[in-house]
Length: 272
Image: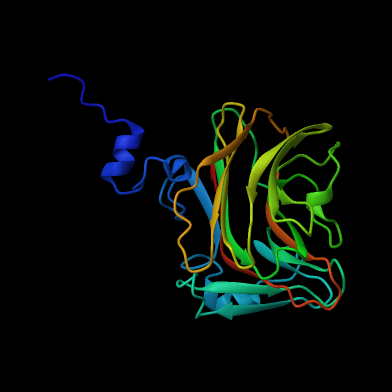
């Protein structure tokens, strides 16, 4: 009868999980649906998930010890639902930092469940847009260090207790987003994407492949345009050795500026 095995790319095409062969992120990521796979656990914030949009405004603030998700509300940062966004037609969440310079906002998963173990891949992804790309910095990814208000994760110096795999926007006056993976004092960085306008829609994905590699995927598009395929941007061959937590952290750099971030989703999946 011959070999009837179907390759992964063909299977994803047949099952309509990947419409474009250039969409590398769609090829490697699992369905981000809690309970879909017995061996992959999923935690999501956004539409149709735990902390779905209708109860997002009740996400406990940072410091709660029994919450699965928390949000940063430094200096009275606010959260609001958005039901009429031109890009996020399935809904969005606008986080606005407090009125002080370098006030932060964002979401964090309190359990540190992302381990770079052999043969146990994990995936994290987020989609959002920023009101003023020249007045902000951010971190998206996983990190070892305990979360603390006023600690800018994108500015951390590599060292013991600070393993991370993340996208960083480290310069407030530039749209450049870089990649980073670190194990103690050893840190690898690379070029990611560079936003060109306010309210560009940003899609980012990170994968630990279980084979010694941290892989970064991403793309952006002008508001009103679909982002489309997410190509592979960088691969850092390094293996952090500590459990890490998922965080999207955003900071605006100007006092009294009303520069929010609007989030469509933050998701993570890991092999058990």
